[in-house]
Image 1 (cartoon, helix red, strand yellow):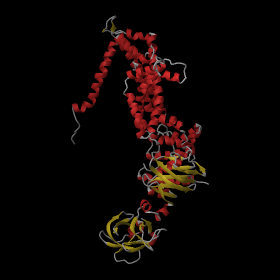
Image 2 (tube, chains in turn purple, cyan; image 1 turned 45 degrees about the vertical axis):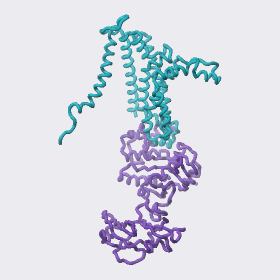
Image 3 (cartoon, one colour; image 1 turned 120 degrees about the vertical axis):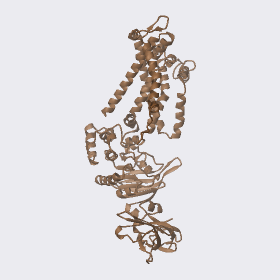
Image 4 (cartoon, chains in turn yellow, cyan; image 1 turned 90 degrees about the horizontal axis):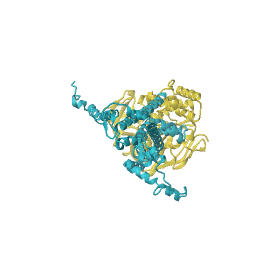
Length: 349
Length: 285
């Protein structure tokens, strides 16, 4: 079987549980993002896959072969570390060709491969430079080239763009995705930046408290979060608490229809999740289904979009609209919010 | 804008204070020693001012040449052994959890608090025939009977290594603690075994601190004068012992001063050579 299988993996450090029953299956050639807040276990999972940590329970299978007990230096995986971990005593070319030197490749082969990889990451002609003479973005590319020198079966990156400034990070996200598509290499990236995950990933794994919360394509996770944590962590989400009823949820006695998950009993506490761009602001008095009264508390015109903060059912809500569709509202106006049923996801509390 | 930088004495104090200390405790004593090294030795007396090269001419005597070469040889050898033992020790120590490091560091610091006298006589007892370790080895039937392992070259070498070990650990501990743990991990993911990682990455990355520790232990060994007398035979006496002998027992201060200057020049030349070679390797990269 081709691809990576993480078979009920658990990892504890003393009394601390870093990973709890992680069970995932990734087909070959995909770009996967492990996404979650600090301390959720995503880096530990990457280190277990790389062979830098041994799982306490479970197995890691790569292309059907059990690699759980295989030491890191025999796995043949490319890893880019958060600190990049470039060798300061070696030149750029020597860093990239380090794995070839370990395998006994001659100098000419090493030199040729280093030049090829530098061209691949758009950094030609720097092979003889010391690492200290490179900028942050250039070091990033060298670290990627070094990890690719082995022609790895799996490419692992631990928060690779976290040290870069916002503009360069955005550019590198696109570049990394294009590189992965060109090489067709299975890639796993650890990140806490949901925007980064949505830009690059074919599959996003959302983690929290050592567990996988949701796995799926980015848009699927964005549109249909399975719980309040995912809804809140991926993008911005409005959460309105209520009580589950036949159609969806009852909020302050008003029926709001929405997709209700199986097994959520009538009368149990739940919340409606709706994205800010789905909320429609109408003038007060507007009638219709799935509508709630609200009051405008703040309006922010950002040029490309308009953000309207609203007080609704004792909660603060955000509505985002384009300048062209901007409703004529001011702070203190009473309005009616329309929550389209198709955009409402009912989540258990 | 008003210039509020301090003027006068307060402004110059950061330079004047160390300069005064250096002058008082290094330049003046060194000047006196240099002058004395050219003075005339009075037979059966002390010395009288003068300028003669007789004290330096005595280095042509093979006895003192041998003592100088032996001093350099055993100092280098002990320094290399200490680094070879202390570097992996410190590396492994820094990989432990902080709480697990504490007992080891306390032990190393405890050894550091022992004086050269205590260390010398402790090893002298441990290596003796009557109360020494050889009794244990004989009891284990590894040797036919207990024997004296001191005085000997091996005993002196062991004593010097023991003396230099805690200093070396303390010098290497800060840079090894600061070493990014992802650097050796990167080497491993690129296919190098832990042993190859140690020699191909960790040692070269920490070449500067290693060189510094090597020079420190070498200079330290060169100055040892008690251990060679306690653990070595007269042929194992280093130049420091001969300097003490000439200054204290033979009352020949001019010759002792000449030897001290000679030893200092040699050790400076060695340190310079080591640094030049180290710098050349760095430039070659």
